[in-house]
Length: 68
Image: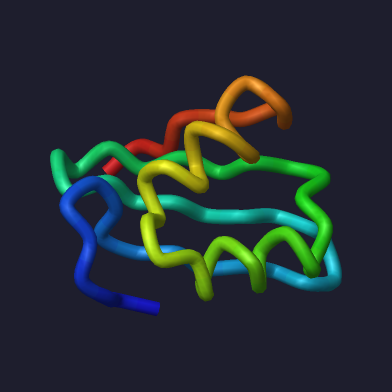
């Protein structure tokens, strides 16, 4: 789901596996696991995606950097 953000370019979510895919404007892409669907929806609706990410996702869920 692309949108206007100074930090985050794209957010995708796999509900059945609770995987959150985040692509940053610098090109870095990560998958965060165990993210509840409600948190994903709040992330998408947040006024500041970058602030929401820092406050509610970063350092709270296991993640892997994606190649490519």
